[in-house]
Length: 353
Image (tube, rainbow, N blue to C red; front, side, top):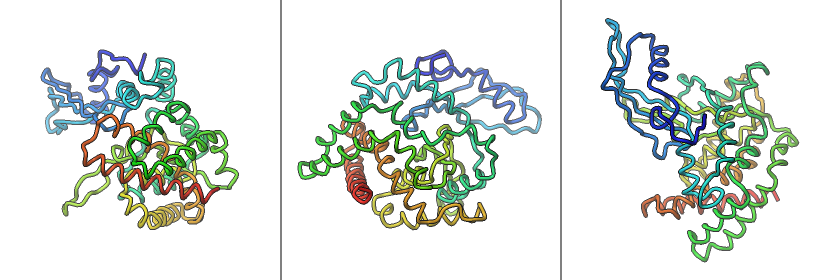
């Protein structure tokens, strides 16, 4: 079964109506079936690239008396169809996007990582949520932790998605996006990224050498993997974090750096970042009931992973800007954020040098 070729199932995936019906019957405790007027809508655009998200209207029939079933629900299905299209837009492995060999390798990774769901109903806010998740995971036995990825997470991520040539292609676009007055900074950033890319194998061992404690990381924290609702006062409330396929046992700096970088404005990240890291540390310690790592160790871990997190975010953002996928206002906002990330990556790198 190929995850990157269109199939006959829902939204061109290998998942059938029968698969979804059976799963929902088990989940909802019902024998009701989908009706002839069942309907599905693709709501996947810009919500991740390793899956299709289907909004299903099941048209239930033969519903048991007194049973209330949802009129609509969302189904997330692992597939590489969207990733193949994205790889062409971002010119991974050249203008044609990922080749068959690369997609097959990614298919193995996707299958290995699938079905790592964690119940987060009791998690209230994002920072408290992810730190609580990590702290609670400390109670798992070594056997129970075997499903998670290891310290080679970043190495696998970059080796499967990026190559040195594709990174250089992305970097070359930065000169067109930035004004000439920024080209010296771009030169330095490109050199810095190439330096970090060359250190991937060693990078997996740096935290071990520094004695950083390893905890469960979500591994893919960005907005579309965080589900919110509004409370009675109209304020946003976190109800779930999803897509745990990338769960790995790493220093906490990976999740915290991706979270701050991807979800906060430049001003908030710079001004409130230390405060949010402090909240992560306090929550983890409270839940774990003892200090596993100091606040200073958390800060060091955050700074250590900051450049690598930037390497995951900046190239894709640049490519979207270059390929006309954004409005002018979105481009301006993105450029401002990327400029700040560039400045901060160089500052962190200079500090480590």
